[in-house]
Length: 191
Image: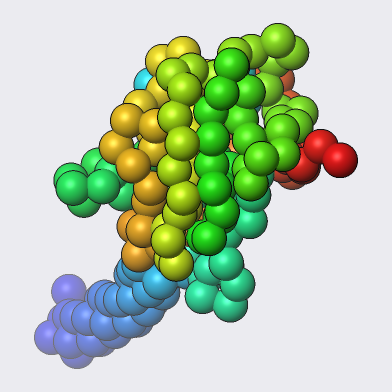
């Protein structure tokens, strides 16, 4: 190989490496910005949201949805565990700021009205009895599998600053999940 051919080949290879590194750097920056500020992925661990979400499912979490609005009753959210911000959980918002959340005789009551939760199995009793009035910026979050869920009944209300974002899509869904995402946010107060 002549000296000129070697120089041309070296120029071609370094140019390719430079172009590849620009693309890789751009993709890395876009990926990091997306992950930290817009959307992230969460893997369900545990049984606290069965039957609607099962262990191992992969979910997307929209981090910007609550920058322009507030969590609503029935939203499934990703959140930090109060007091231990290394762990992330998914729970369902059942109580909103300023509301009185009562668990009595197996029923959820919001400001004295029974909360109808269509996403829960029929005849599911919520225990233990409790009564709490939420302050500004506090939410009452519970797992759908009430008998095994560690949630606001045990560790109190969740500050809005601990809510990471709204669960929006399933990337990997297993056959034992009972509802399609979007169809399960039906919680309303009985008239």
